[in-house]
Image 1 (cartoon, rainbow, N blue to C red):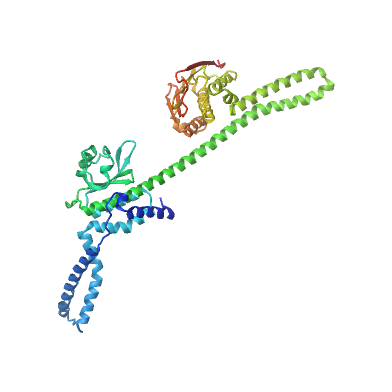
Image 2 (cartoon, helix red, strand yellow):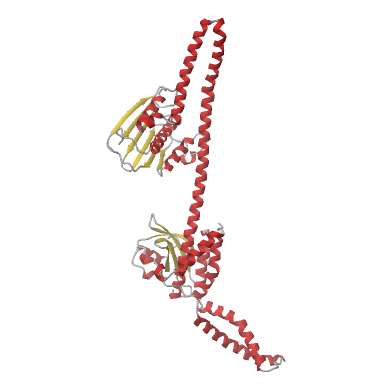
Length: 507
């Protein structure tokens, strides 16, 4: 994933500001910039000595090849200066890399790390770069990077460079407070704990916490040195600096990944909502076209026929008017049923339990399929005639219960359906259980598919309240739908229980 330039610059400024802050602000020792002036003086002296030796060697070797160095000492000095100018940068880099690998690492990171962070926020690219750089430059048998899972208090292995003493140990318990983990330090300096024992078992010699202020992000672990090198002060400083920058990069990558995941979920939810709305519109259009409009057409034809019979056959006019009256009453009832399905008035007037009772009463008056249940048992605990203050929550509880009930009536082929609502201090739970055939596949696979938009509606309504929705089903075992929605209004009487039984006319 390529970061936009403004995000990369902002991330770079955050890194710079963190490490240009005072030691008291970041709680760590300031990292020295290498090479220091003393180092440069030493490198210059060594380079001057080597240059002088090469110049003397050339002075004596050139005559052997019939090449006479003519001129004064000035020419000889110019040759020496040219040699010094050519050799000094190379020797400085060679000496620093040979005798001070930590210092060379710092310079390499300054040049490369910012470029990598600007170009990518993909952890699959960033972690191997950091681990391989540490392993190669510090000559370590292994470098591990761990991520912290706060909910489980575990460190999980995110990337490993090299080999570990125990290959299958990919999780470590974090049984230490974050304070002792701050800063780079040898593992033996940690307090006695399961984390310390696990790190030693893996052959990790030095660790540094990936932390941002008070938030622990993860851990970097260095294995033993390939040539027996130990972690000196400069190694600890480099590792500490790397851990701080990597923590910021990891946090940035996680935020970007979470943002992308959230966008994907929002797009999926939007598409599902559009599909559900289209399905509702289609069902309403079918209902109006196949029943209401056809009856209105019949009524129109009856009225036209009645007008012709006003003079020719007044006796038949009475029967036509009676038929129109029946059709008018029927259409009035059907339109009331449709509008009640969109937003039942009894829900706003009398509350959740009364609205569910009214809906189940209306079901007993409809021509239901032969596979519909014989009875529906409704129990409500904690309501005691009280109302939920939030009308939107009460509305969604009504539709969640009704949608699960409609699904059971249409698909379950059950003898009975049991509905239980419970209002407690911090949540309202809805349980709908049937004795039917069970779902043919997992609810997650059916959700949103053709004919199962009801499951999608359930999921979206529960998710909107940060609730929890679960299913228990199996072939021949029936289906239980459980929804839990948090509420900030405790029940006035949580032990009160109501029970109702509704008989359907399907059999």
